[in-house]
Length: 121
Image (cartoon, rainbow, N blue to C red; front, side):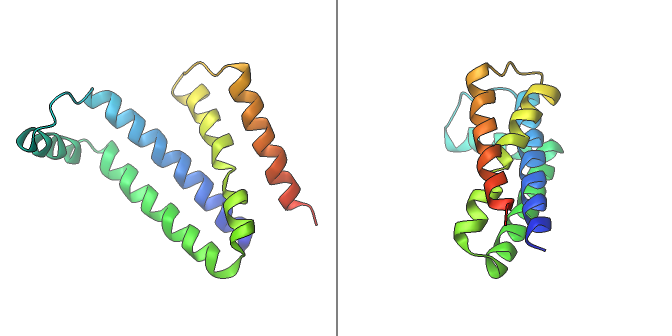
């Protein structure tokens, strides 16, 4: 059950970040931070389906994480869910077509090695 919850946290977090990135790229940069302008931005973002979907997906990730905390130690849950760094690096490279340099791949690989150490008995 622990690893199922870890997988749910990782997948939902990566999906939420993908949706949020896509939604914000479609919206564009926010330049005006006056209260009225921020209200218009919030309204526009609420109509951009990517953003509400990202919020909903992140909520699933949050509830899966707190459920994980109810059955596993914090010293397991936090490092295990760091696997989302690997998933997000893959999403950035292959779905968002971002350039991921060797240093970032190395970092993701080190995180993967750490998560693998947690999985070993």
